[in-house]
Amino acid sequence: MLDCSALPKAELHVHIEGTFEPEMVFEFARRNEIALPYGSVAELRDRYRFTDLGSFLEVYYANMAVLRTERDFRELATAYLRRCVAQGVRRAEIFFDPQAHTSRGVPLRTVVDGLVQALEAVPEVSAELILCFLRDQPVAAAEQTLRLAEPMLDRIIGVGLDSAEVGHPPQEFAPVFERARALGLRTVAHAGEEGPPSYVREALDSLGVERIDHGIRALEDAGLVARLRADRTPLTVCPLSNVRLGCVPDLAAHPLPRMLDEGLMVTLNSDDPAYFGGYVAENFTAVGAAFDLTETQLRELAANSLRASFLEESARAELLAEPIP
Ligand code: HPA
Ligand code: ZN
Image (tube, rainbow, N blue to C red; front, side, top):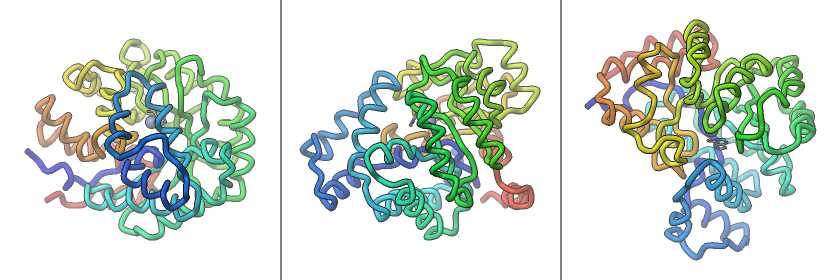
């Protein structure tokens, strides 16, 4: 089979806090003198048997307690970007969750400066930051976060919407997305991961997003599928995540082949690779094997990620023209 690490690609759906490998959690805890509620890496990994998004988010936010300094954020993102280099990722549009840090007393400046230092330390990858609002927190908190971020917008290309989806429809966040667009930011939102197809419609209509993160449940609504196809709206699909969070029973049941048959603009991504058993190349390899995808299909999925990125046109064309070994 094709070596999927060799395909030039973009990763458009990765939460930097979701790249926090257990070994690093322990290292940072020791260094920052913070006690962990687990005795060993093995014990922590043992908690990674998730039943749904909520059960994952609990561990995901708990581990963040040990992320405190600029150095922590720099080392976290540098480690991720080094993996990008090894996996053919030429472009990374990286989510981060400011509210999960500011609510613990870590200044937004500390988070952004640490992340930006990492982007500068690994120039082989064209990388940008997307600030995500936590949809299970009040809209006012999202608005305040955007205000806090205004002096740092030269280092942030867009905003997204993540955290617990069901019961938190996109529409509530329309004013803050409108403000973000007025500030020149690009927009994306998680929708249709656990939530209904109506959330995907709302993300498009009320938030005006340019890409949908996940979007797997869009398939339940034929009219929506037709619209996504006609508009070539990119969907940042994360197969290993969907399996590990029980959004689909197993990889064989994943809707990716149906999404491709429907002619949707699908990209493959890792979401929270330290928790879900694989980075982006492993997602390619897993679906390639599960669905017997052809080399042409895998190349097309990699090319889609570059097409769906927020890269400038000339940089995108250059990456799409790169010869593949
Ligand atoms: N869904 C919603 N919020 C998240 C996720 C996800 O998969 N990962 C990190 N925050
Ligand atoms: Zn996600």
